[in-house]
Length: 176
Figure: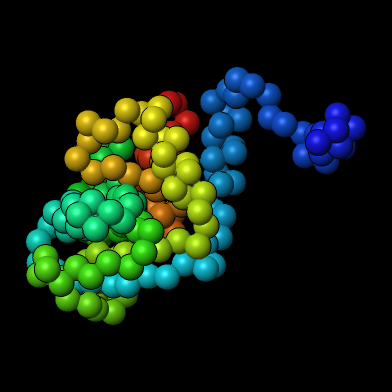
């Protein structure tokens, strides 16, 4: 790309100042949190009686056995990153659909599900997760997660946003 092309891009969409201050990060994060969901994703829904954190751990373990990348998202990931409330539903991101019947889970409707397996069409989920795990040294955690901005998008799109959990996670991200 030529310098002239870069200059034209910057004129259209100027780059934010770096390092960004807290207010600029908060504003940008608020814009990112409300982006529309990945339109090409595929989801399956599962119901089980184990705590949702256990269900997420089991899905990640199964992914490791199958060599399918599986990462925590949603409420469980938010609890791993910045605990605020006890997760009521589980969400995992997987490279492909996985069968969780071996863990006493049964397929269900979205309304009854305790765990959702999401296969995103957007490949940047895996790239940003890898980046996040490198800078956070997340290998010490028993639940590897997608990057915090994706978790915030999950939380903001969830049904239960009135307890302040998305705002708390957003503030945690802003101050990192």
